[in-house]
Image 1 (cartoon, rainbow, N blue to C red):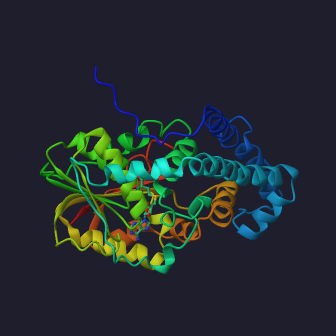
Image 2: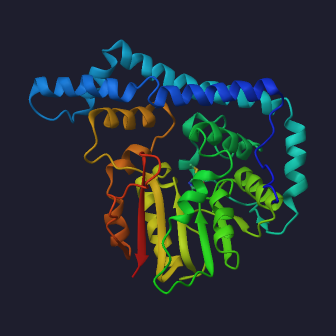
Image 3: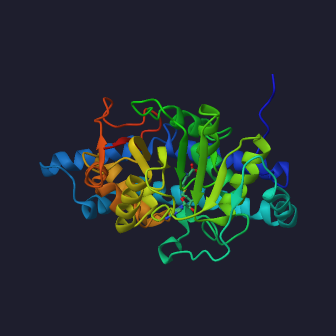
Length: 356
Ligand SMILES: C[S@@+](CC[C@H](N)C(=O)[O-])C[C@H]1O[C@@H](n2cnc3c(N)ncnc32)[C@H](O)[C@@H]1O
């Protein structure tokens, strides 16, 4: 059997690999059942709720209760530190081989089978000037940002992104349009193109295009797809202004980008997706679950992530009602039988919208 080529950026030494394996396990321990912070802190918060006799939904009060406990302060410190450990290790490892990695990107830029279209006059809008999840220099200010992102998300997803597992799972869940026609697919904010290539595997005859504003992400996406032999095209464009003609796409897809957009850009992006998705086509969105109906700890965690993990727009996204926004711009969203949970990680939700 033909093995899949490994497209994960190489680290400089076995020490770096071992260190990042440790951080991945450490992250699992903090976020999972090992340290079990969620259940332990939530139990304390629910006890406070019982004492006060009404639901604990005041964020200021929840924060004060969490930070008053040593356990809450420890959780915050460890959650922040494991992110910093990851990025520092990647910085060390990539810096020591910067010229090799840079040459690697240049080698693949002009090789196929797919294409890479970068826009030399591209203007980055001011709202993207953020170090999302503390990534050094953010998504576009370092030539190696795509490599940082790829290895960073390997650690982040703790076993679900060693070989595109999560992207393949999510893409396979996207429903077909009613007429089953899938000739053209748009992957919005594709970053390093893992869903773009997963779509190609699923629909090998379709034209698949991934767009992103970040040139460094797109160069890594193109290199990755070329190594895999997947014929997909990448273009440097904004999700809210894609510059494609109307009604082009049978499937438009967006994985975890909406929570990184200011609310007004969320509206612009849904409007744009409605413009480029053909009637009967599907707009599939996977993103963070909303805050409605969440436990006190989950409300706290959402705030913590926004404030201490470089997610300045995520609170507004989680508080908004994306289904209403989708409906407003011309989509019909079927109520998901599983309560709109993705079925995968509990922090993700999906919206499968049909263009009417
Ligand atoms: C969390 S990542 C999205 C993940 C990506 N869909 C994946 O499968 O890995 C955010 C990506 O969205 C891109 N992005 C954010 N806002 C954008 C916008 N307005 N237009 C185009 N790309 C955008 C960023 O450059 C980054 O690559």
